[in-house]
Length: 313
Image (cartoon, rainbow, N blue to C red; front, side, top):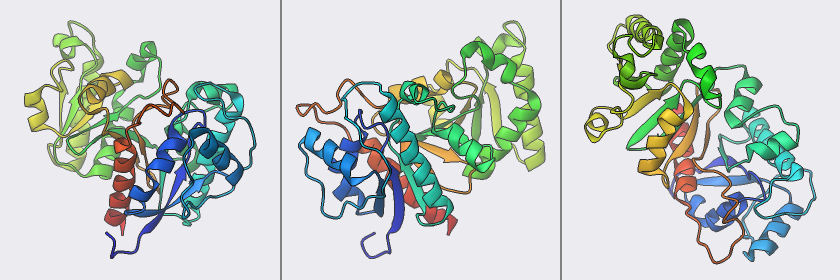
């Protein structure tokens, strides 16, 4: 990698009351092996975080000025930190849109803080979907297993009504186009995948969508609906690397139980590349100097952003 020209990657710093800025500072030298990072934070807030953490700012730590000057309150949900994390992300998107960077890597935001700041979005993916007018797909995982989410930050009681043949068919086709795998597992919604209608009828819609997608591709790409409680068993994971889950916790609970410290978040089906850590702001350990935080997910997110760029050029 050192002999190749390193791509520029925008890093949105996330909620400054959480662990994101500490990750950025302590992993900086490591990620510069893979890219040239541009951090969406102003020098004032960077210096405040550096002082609070007692971590020196690396000399080649390049920043992009994001307006804001407020008190960092470790581990607290605040309106100002929520607004700043959104502004940092939005600036990173703009840099990618203008092709001033080749990818975005996002550090964790706090949804409650966004709500306090009266930001209408619930997360990064919703912003990207609205900004580009594209059906952004949220996929999380690591090299051993990836899970895509048909519904994301949606109340559980609303999920069954969203499972509809036409929209799921489009989702499956967009997902295939993004990852180009010939073997993708699709989970059912109900226990036992409904036992042929005994426990629900949503699987009828899922089955139709699978059939439609496979017919349009003229290949038997999508398998299922799989019984959800065995979909992530060791034997099943030998057969599949990519899974489509019907709702957030159905896919992410097993993923995080298996690969919590190394998984990443990837936004697919977009004109830009965006990856992220697969964990939250960790307010409970933020700015606690006696606790060593794990950088693996962040470093993996940077590596994947660089890899995705290579695939596009």
